[in-house]
Image 1 (spheres, rainbow, N blue to C red):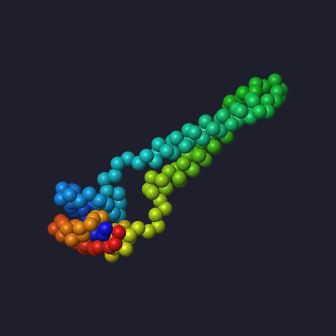
Image 2: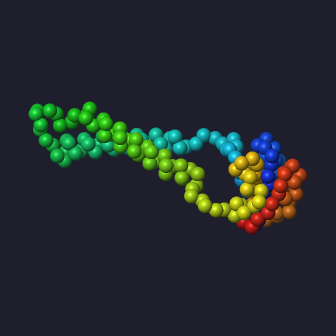
Image 3: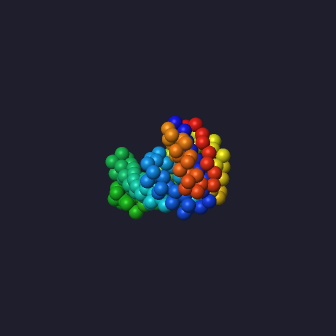
Length: 162
């Protein structure tokens, strides 16, 4: 298996080439660029919301359990279940778990940490994070992929081992 990388000057040229490459029968295609190209919505806000709600519920339950079931103390005739006193700690635990789920969710959603991939060795990839848009095709017929990328107006085409 080989990886053929083609660099394009802008996003529209890359998107046009991407559509034609898919029509030509190439399936194992990845795109790289300085900004996300046509991505959908991220699941990360829902992960953070779920973590925050779970943390708030956990904090509220934890305090309720401690003051009502584990250590019930009758202080001055006040009720054992005094929920307004539980709100600050429940809020803080909710925020803590929202932040933690956001950090860990970010790593999971972005499949990190990936410190190195074979496609990173392609010379065309050096400018993929600044001003070039790249398409990487993993294929067993690198000559066809190389020819297709040149035909679809790639500025630079490189090949590396997969």
